[in-house]
Image 1 (spheres, rainbow, N blue to C red):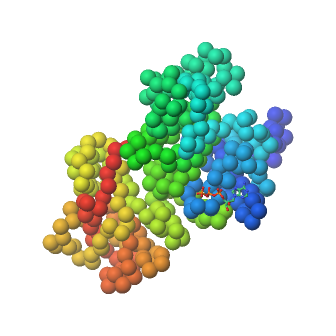
Image 2 (tube, protein in one colour):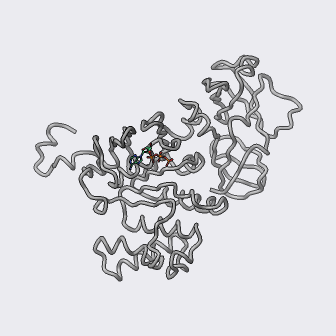
Length: 363
Ligand SMILES: Nc1ncnc2c1ncn2[C@@H]1O[C@H](COP(=O)(O)OP(=O)(O)OP(=O)(O)O)[C@@H](O)[C@H]1O
């Protein structure tokens, strides 16, 4: 922005900033203070991760306008929202327990937003039908929430939030109330919808896997402050606190499965126990990696890669090694093992992972 911009006749204070989210959220609750900065461009998915009581829900409520800011600012696409009441904000919210209107059908739940925004009843219902169709719920349009499964209700809640065409989508533990199988399905769907969503999405979750699969950037909050922020891969390889090392300790890749082999989009193949076909994620924890100075002979591990130590970080009595090479990965080992292997940046190593320690699932 230049001084010249301020002299442009139609440039108001509210419309001089860029697109996306630009927030400095300060909220005081008795002895607790949230003080975090969140920025995101349209199309970005941010995940807020952190332990209980870290301030994630407070941050989400502040973004939605349900909790007032003590200080700071909140701009969305260049417009100040601090004083805009929640119902007038271009913000869609999905809660873990869906909060659908129990007396309205799925269709009318979704039509509610467009109707409030001034669409006629016919227009609103047509838009709602379209959203339900995109969620694969066309057959359930007439069902009341109590007749829907947890996964279906969560998809209706997502359709309801998206139908208002929000510029900011807030998701509060959207998968937490679902059983493991449904969670897998809804996670994959949510991933597709978030990838298509053209505005900013902010997701609160306790589950590092949800965060890593769904978000472009993780923002880790502890005691009301951001302790680390970055891409899932960055954070997994360079965790700044012990909590983060434990939390996002996951090597996660995308590839194409053909039986027990997953060919990675970038890099080699990984042998897994699951028998799958098509696009998948494959994951294994840093603790599942065994390192050798020389190429192991006689190891039964099907996955063997040549790497180079890019960095070492100590977390409690463990060392996390950041390994570069044909497959960039994080490995955890004890300080004794690291000394025995004479690990140091630049050292060549061989890494193995047993197929049984990997986990693959469809994207
Ligand atoms: N309305 C309120 N009044 C007073 N204190 C509050 C209020 N809401 C939250 N707090 C306090 O603010 C802190 C942050 O709570 P918050 O719910 O935002 O954390 P969280 O990271 O979402 O935790 P969880 O993962 O358990 O949901 C906690 O110490 C909580 O007790």
